[in-house]
Image (cartoon, rainbow, N blue to C red; front, top):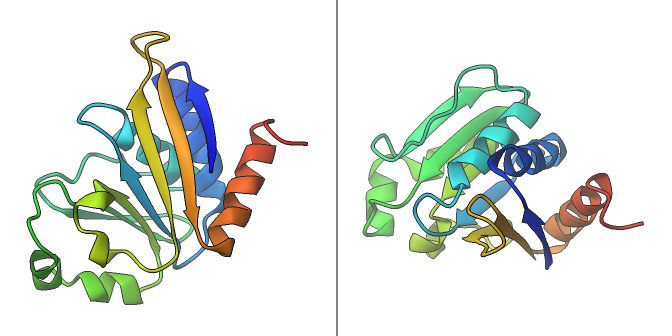
Length: 159
């Protein structure tokens, strides 16, 4: 695990952007945290790093938004879902087979939808200031351990 404190939404987006530059086809990132904590802010940054040009909005009511960038980007929101069956009904496995980048808000709501290896990012409020956030990276598998290490180095946290 690697963690840091982001002092503001723009910094959170910048960290997301740096991660986006490191993502490759088939990568899955699950973001978890309370409502309003900055999951969509992080995803907007990641999308910018993936060269998405169109505005990125929360897919709360659409469940999955698709964007064109360096690779296809699928921005998902599991908040309103009650079961994996609901995901199956909207073609979840077809999205997975397309080997784009999958960014899932509320990924912890339907854990069986996630592959064995993925990157979990938890974002939480920090009492340092109203805009500060704890961002914790929990890589599940060696592929994501390497991505987190590279991200930490790019952000100046490791030698």
